[in-house]
Amino acid sequence: MSSIRTLIRGGLVITASDELHADVLIEDGRVAALAAHGTAAAETWTADRTIDASGKYVIPGGVDAHTHMELPFGGTAASDTFETGTRAAAWGGTTTIVDFAVQTPGHALREGLDTWYDKADGKCAVDYAFHMILSDVNERTLKEMDHLVGEGVTSFKLFMAYPGVFYSDDGQILRAMQRASGNGGLIMMHAENGIAIDVLVEQALARGETDPRHHGEVRKVLLEAEATHRAIQLARVAGSPLYVVHVSAEEAVAELAAARDKGLPVFGETCPQYLFLSTDNLEEPDFQGAKYVCSTPLRPREHQAALWRGLRTNDLQVVSTDHCPFCFRGQKELGRGDFSKIPNGLPGVENRMDLLHQAVLDGRISRRRWIEIACATPARMFGLYPQKGTIAPGSDADIVLYDPHAEQVISAETHHMNVDYSAYEGKRITGRVDTVLSRGELVIDRREFTGRAGHGAFIPRSTCQYL
Image (cartoon, rainbow, N blue to C red; front, side, top):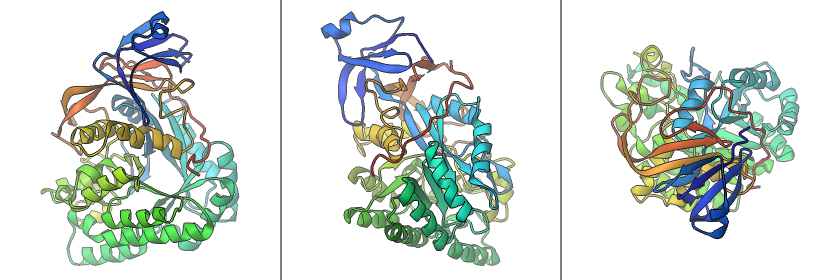
């Protein structure tokens, strides 16, 4: 814990609720006080270290509530470790990740969770928490859910996709939702009709349609919308809240909006890839489209407007990355000649805050909404607020000095994620992280990495703060 008193002077503090020209005093790793520039209070503050934030935004560290470091998938594993992935997160202004511990079918939740504790322990540059993936719902694992909530793992992900891997049927989903409605846990859902998709995959391959673009074509919009609708109805029957991950299609947003209009505790997340990329990328020649294979898949460009509208109207509340990187060489290439063997996932943990700042400049969202969807709401959704997600007395001093005028070109040559391509290669954006503090410690100091593996701590979470 940093015992150095730090004073951040002269910046524009932006939170989900306020924008104010204020100085921020940090003591013992936490925000001690804020005071308007030039006021008597601020003038009397002394500190061991003063950071000049003139001309910069002072924002809460990002909370990325959906990452997959070191995830085993399709005979390989995500290329970012907890060490490389959290370092890249810091470079991108994200100071907390919530990763997914995986239950192996036939094994206890506890065993899966302990495996992930071991992967992350002593490796992370920024703070982390875990969700639990349920891949085998039975009497024993249902009881285990209660214990996990007790130790701060308060959300559980289920899959309507990937039969034979993570898939749960409607009965298993209903049971898990019923359990969560009693213990306060939040059910997260990968909403795609995996049984139907597998039929379409088989038929496409039989027709010789093997290229990456067919990945998007078989995972149809209607099968995302249908699964989203079904998940909502199951949650209503169980009396349970529902958080739908990586929403990619206009029709799925419409299902969430209809449920929210009824006052149901239904929430939705989207990701930068759905906001900025499209099936045009999947169609890139020479197997380059494989770089963009993820599930839910990229959609035709016209879906983007509905996602941005959902973020403005609060029918979608969170932007996370679903960061799950696989190198093009040697990993994505496993699917040459068979798109169903391409590992599903994109790198993005380093790009989220910057891409959303570009959306502010493009007039799609406001500055405060940027902080809301990237910091405050994910922290509230997953029981981390106000320790994370805001700048307020008592909050952890997870603070980013953001230069809104710096220009950059996103590229694999300059990013810090452990992957050999960028999904946004060559994209010019304005805005860049300058300095990052995690619990008062400098992790990035004026564009230089000063952090260390092992600084990041496991953060137990309370239950969803919207219920």
